[in-house]
Length: 115
Length: 112
Image (cartoon, rainbow over all chains, first blue to last red; front, side, top):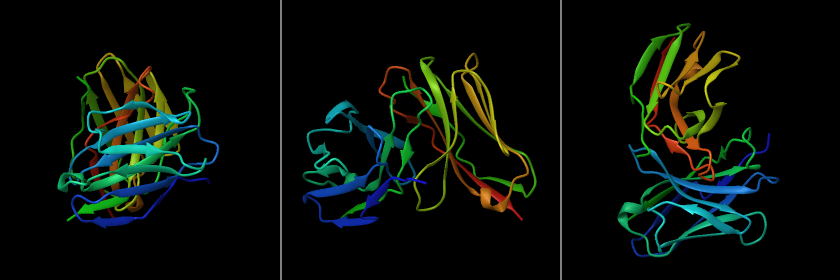
């Protein structure tokens, strides 16, 4: 069964450094999402992406964050200058269409640790 | 306010028992309701997906949505040790580009 894949599984980065998290969505999906889950807290929506532009973003998704679909298969989340509070699990999800019977499918996440 | 409440547990039951997991919510605009299962160090795996009110059954799993009470449930029949995981409810509005709002997740333990 097709699945969303995320790399790396664990990323350790010094505070202030840039980090790029990578995702390969399911191939015929058109809508892409990033969520994060800080340890012990709820999953939180970050951003949705469709047709090469951001559709919606949360308050968390400030100017330090950006997303890109550089080559038609990868979907990346960049954090420009990481902070300690960016440490979390980051999940990528994709959805086939806006039809009501099309849910989001998730990858296994990237654990981001900021030192 | 977009809020979803879910008891974090842990909920421990013997193998073979019927499990009931629940979420309440405050936003009457939610139309899509999902249950995801999450094993340790894995991403959320979709179990059940329901639009608006009603029941949906898939094997040992039954999802119920009561929009009048703003209450959703997931029932697991004949529970197995392999069902031990964290169960997350998630929901979204019709016009929010499908942004999911999540419960905290309930940790379920099925004792052999």
